[in-house]
Length: 197
Image 1 (cartoon, rainbow, N blue to C red):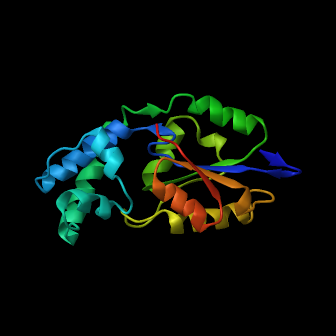
Image 2: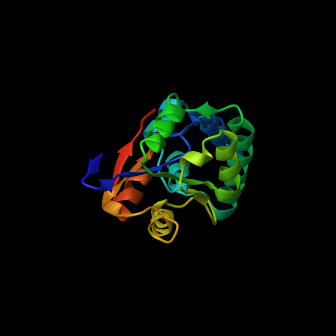
């Protein structure tokens, strides 16, 4: 993926891409759905209906957007259940070697997630892969939004002092598992590859 002296930089998503946590997400979603008396969903329903921002995903099942109070409660329940289930999740098969090979080849990669930054960094560190990335960033601020603005900030940091030499958005590939990852990539002029698991 080189062109002359230009090298491709990879921006990885975390949940559902590097971390194989889909079943934890389904269980946490169903716990949140129980709060508003929705029936549990299956993996197939999740894959078919999932969208960002998350309140729009919930709307597909409720038939309306959740109220502010419902959203806050569902979000709190989701994150509590997810934290309990996440501990049993492993990295996606083959990820450790892929990250190692990319780094060993002298290429750069970073991680940008909508998982809260304060939770993300120690989790990534715990899996032993933090040194593979030039930056590890999670969401700051409230949950439920789009990744596009976070991607802007991530790209600004990658292009800034201490970032990636010769950084340019057209030489970046964002690898994620949701349409929002592709939208965020397009928003900053990068390419995207979506992983279906």
